[in-house]
Picture 1 (cartoon, rainbow, N blue to C red):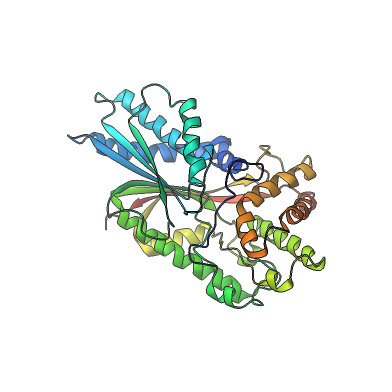
Picture 2: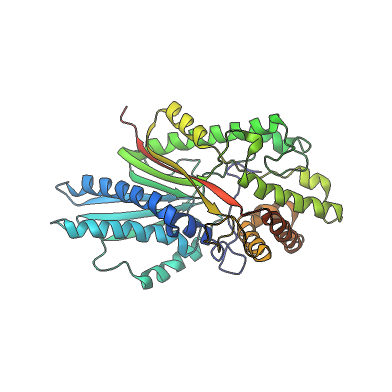
Length: 380
C-alpha cells in the first residue's frame, strides 16, 4: 500500500456510503451523555481561550481552525456548528461583537468526497447557526495530515475526530512478506510478536511526525483536540474490542477463501493500516516528544452498534445489531477491500461479516474504547 495508506470512506450518500453510516461519530462525540460531559466543556474551553486572545487585539483578527480527517456528509459540519455556537455565545458577552472572523479548513485525503461535503453546506445553512453568527468561511484542504498542510504558526486550533488511528501506511515488512501475519488483517490472537512490534513502530513514527508538523503549524499557545479509537488494556495480545472487529473481518475473509472466492495469498498479503494505542502509550509518547502539554486526556466507550444508545450489556436483537455494525465497517473498509480483492466479493463478504458479528454479540455488547486528548503547544 502507498504512503498515506489510501484510506478513504465510501463516497456519495447511498445506502453503503460513509455519509449514510457515520452516526457513530455523532453518537460518540456529540450525543451520548458521557461524551457530551467529556468533550463539550473541553472544546468550549479551547475555543474560548483562542477567541479571547484574538478579541483582545486592537485590530480585527481571524481565528484559523482545521478539522483533520474530516470525511464527508452532514456530520462533518456539526463540529463547525459547535464552534460557531461557542463564539456566538461569547459575542453576546463581548462589547465588540464579531471582532473575530473564523476560517475553517476541512482536511482529508484527495479521494474524500469533497463534492458531497460542500453540497452539505446547503443542509447546514438550512439548519441555521442561530442569530448573529460570527463571520465565517469554509474551505477544503486535500492532503494527508502526515504531511505539511499549513504555513508555520498559522493555525489556532486543530481538531480531529476518528482519524488518527489510521496509519500513513502498512508497515513495509508486512507489505513485502505475505506469510508474516498469516490469516490476519490486523493484530489478532495468532499474530506473532514481530508483527505487533511493526504496528507499534508505525504508530510511533506516524504520531511523532504528526505532532512535529502540527507544532510547527500552530501559533504560540495553539491547541489540539483529538479523538480516536484506542484500547483499554496495555497488553497487546489482549487488544480488546477494536481488535475483535478486525478479527471478525479476517474470519469472514477466511470463509471466502474456503469457498474458493478469495485466494489465500490475497488474504495473507492484506493488512489494515491501523493501530489503536492505549492511553498510557499516548501519554508517554506526547511527554517524550515535549512539543505539547497534555491539558486533558480521557478514555470512554461507545457501543459497536451506532443505532444502540442503551447502557446495558445485553444486545436486544443480535441480527439487527450485526447488520448495523456491518454497514458502518463496510463504509470504512470497502475502498481498501475493493482495491485489494476487487468488487465481486463485497456483498457476500459483508453478509458473512454481519452474521459473524451477530454471533459474537450473543456473548454481550461490543464497545469501542475511545481516547480524547486535549493538547496545548508547549512554550519551551
